[in-house]
Image (tube, rainbow over the protein chains, first blue to last red):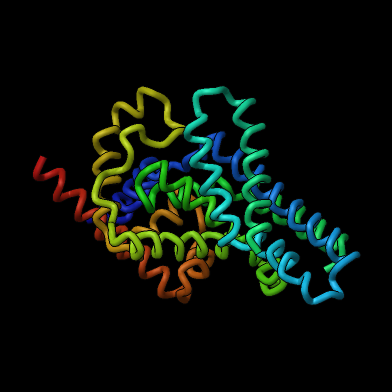
Length: 118
Length: 178
């Protein structure tokens, strides 16, 4: 007598593989995320660079570079992305190219606001 | 950190991002159950990963970073449910996966069965559901899943085995009731 279980188990695993197919992320998400990561990285680096040379030795100026570092942290970045997302959703109907340009601009603007706050 | 090192890190992170965006999104989608929140979870995962990337790379000792990335998503998903005090109560989005590699005929033939399986996956305890998502949607092996869940290889093997058996029972019960 043969044991039907191994075959059944393999069939079921194949079904599971078919049910749980990988899901492609929406193109808009990829674009938004890539733009945000690039912008945040570059902005924080720029801020640090310009301040390091002229002002880092004066403790009164330390708050601003610290804020620049914070932009690279999840909390700051999440805040920026959240605001950008809200605007992006409002602007959704205006085409992909316009959306991309606005997203890049929004990320930069929001990150700058965070820097100014300190 | 000097410029050269930072550029190297950014390049490595960029590779990690490109290689695993679909993995993180797939995990988030099956874990959360809708595309909107899956997008949020994916964003947060990569931002967290970027923040801690240098250390993770240093401590990985050359091992793949996918389990680390999925572990971040796993922790964020747990926070998502805890903070909002909600669980996935509905089936996955009606639209279904965006890129299903089935041909249309097969998809129609097996649709009910696959739907029953997905509904069954939703009924599993969190750890079992996650293990199955990692194994079947992401194609992770036991060792990778163990690292992502912070368990031993042996415990992970048992977890997956039990998850499959429980899911089979759920699906059989659903079929009998249909």
